[in-house]
Each structure stands twice: as structure tokens, then as C-alpha cells.
Amino acid sequence: MNEIFWLFILTLLPIFELRLTIPLGILSGSMHLPLLGNISGFGLPWQVVFAVCVIANALVAIPIFFFLDFIHHRFLHIGFYRRISDFFIVKMQKKSRELKPQIDKYGYIALALFVGVPLPMTGAWSGALIAWLLGLDRRKSFIAITAGVIIAGVLVTLITLGSIGIFKFAFS
Figure (cartoon, rainbow, N blue to C red):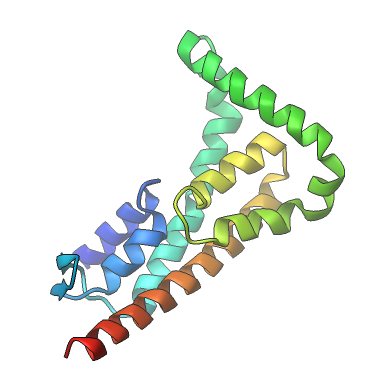
């Protein structure tokens, strides 16, 4: 139970998300992998790891939207925050006006696919920020982000299980 709690918490962090916590949750004990050395994991069943990580990662969008919708403007009186915010927001809003027809047509599908790519900087955190910057509907964005998280979760789980199988076969 303690492992599930930590898996949930680590998945909420932008550095980890499910791209790192799914392998961590599935790996058992201490495995020795060539070039990587000893890797310790929680050794939970992949179905539990998948469910916990997908739920936690999808839920990340809610506090991000809350912060950006209700708290962001309170921080704008801080010069450093305002300069960074203005630079990115003005740039993104200008670009979104230029691409409005494409965003209206493909925005939510593109958002789901962006979040679904299991690479760094393409997770739920980035997806929620992009949805907010583009002014997309929160409910539809949350659904698209959740779909992307599920896609990423499936891909990372399959890659993890396949890699473990290959390493066990190759080095046994």
C-alpha cells in the first residue's frame, strides 16, 4: 500500500509523470541491467501500476487549470513572473490567432496526441498549459489530456514489459 501511495505522488510531479513511474512501479526489487547497473522498483502488478499512474497523471490537469484560471493573475504583480508570463502568453496568443482555424478543427485531437507521446515535456503538465494558453475549453481539454495520458500509459507499459522480457531473455 505504501508503494501505491508513493507511485501516485511521484506521478503527480512534472519531472516524473507516468513516463518514469510506470517502469518504476513495474520493476521488482533490484534488477541489474547492463549499462544501467542496479535499478530498484516497487514490483507491483502492471495492471495496478497502470491504473494508479494514469489516474494520478490525468488528475494533474485539474490543479494546473485552477492555478492558471484563478491564481495566475494574482502573481502578475511580481515583476519577474509578469515578464516571463507576458513573453510566453503574448507569443502564444499571437500564434493561436494565426492558427485559429486549425486549432478549432484539430486542437483537441492534437492535444491528446501531444500528451500521448511518451517523451519528456509532452505530458499532462505541458498539455494543460498549452490548452490554457490556447484558450481551449477546460472540459474538452481535460478529456483530451486524459485520452493522451491513457495513450502514453499504454505505450510506456508495453515498452516497459517488452524491455523487461527482452532483458530477462537476453541475459538469463
